[in-house]
Length: 399
Image (cartoon, rainbow, N blue to C red; front, side, top):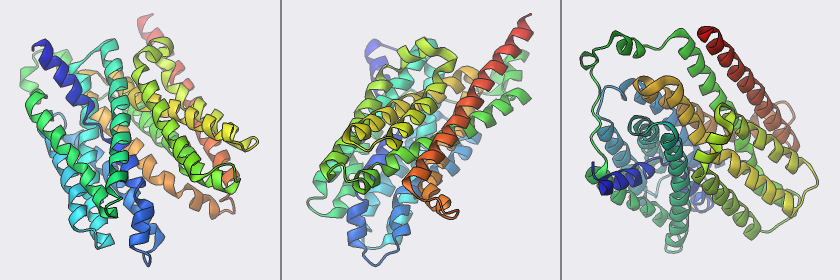
C-alpha cells in the first residue's frame, strides 16, 4: 500500500465512527421539532434523540456475531447507507412524528453497524501505540464532524426546521471515500489458520467472557453516570440563573473542544497511564459533579463541561483500545461491538435517570448529581480491583 493510500485509509477510518454526529445533530433540532408538533407527547419528542441509541445497542450484538464472518468494508457501507437513508428520508417525511421515529430507528441500525466496525477495523489494521493513537484521532475527528454538522444543520434550519435532515447528505461523500480508499477486509476462515494455538484463540475463554461482561457493564454505568452532566447543564444554568442561552451554547462548545483536544492526544495519555487509563473517566466525572454541587457560578459550569469533555475524550478510544489489547486481533471485533453496546444502552437509559429517581422522591438536580457520583465511584473502585486482579493472575502465570 502506497503512502498516499495509507493516508487516505486513515482519513476514511476516522469518518465512520458517527457517535458524536449522532448525539449532537438531532439534539440541536429537538426544540424546533417540539414546535412543529405542539400537541405531541413530550416523551415522543425526546424519543427522536434517544431511539437511535436503543437500536445502536441492539445492533451491537448482531455486529458481534457477524463481524468476523463478513467483509468489514461491506458492513461499513451497509451501515453508512442506512444512516444516510434514515436521515435524509426524514426530510421528505417530516410531516408525521412517527415517520421521523422510523427514520431515527433506521439511523440507529446504520450507526450501530458502522461505529463498532470502526473500532474493529482499527484493531485489524494497526498495532500498539499507533492503534491507540488512531482510536484517539477517530474520536477527535468525530467530534469535529459533529460540530460542523450541527453548525450546518443550524444554518439549514433557518430555511425550515426539517432542512436539518439534509445535513446527512455529507455522508454521501463519506460513502464515496469508503468505496475508493478503505481496503477490503474479508473474514479470516478457520481453515486458513494453521496453528492449533491460533485456532484456539478464536474461542473466548471463561476469563475473557468475565472480562467482556465486566467491561460492558463498566461502559454502561460510566455512560449513564457521566451523561447526567451534559444532560442537566442547561437545566442547572436556568435553575440557578447563572447564565443566558448564549452561555449554555458556549458551554457545550467547550465540552466539544475539550473532547476533541483530549482525543487527539489520547496516544500520549495512554502511554502515561497505561492500564489505569480507563480509571480517569469516572474520576473526572466525579470531580465534575462535585464542582456542580458547590456554589453555582459561570466558572463551575465551564469547569464541569471541560471535565466532562476530558471524560468523553478518554472513555471511547480507551475502551476500544483496551478491548483490542485484551482480546487480540482474533476476537477484537466481537469484544468491541459488545462493549460499544454498553455505551449505546447507557446513552439511551441515561435520559430516564431523573424520572427514575423521581419515583423515590429524588428527582432534583442535587439527587441526580449524587446518583452520578455514586455510579462513577462504584465504576472506579471495580475497575481498580479488576486491574489488580488481572495483574496478580498474570504474575502467578509467569511465576
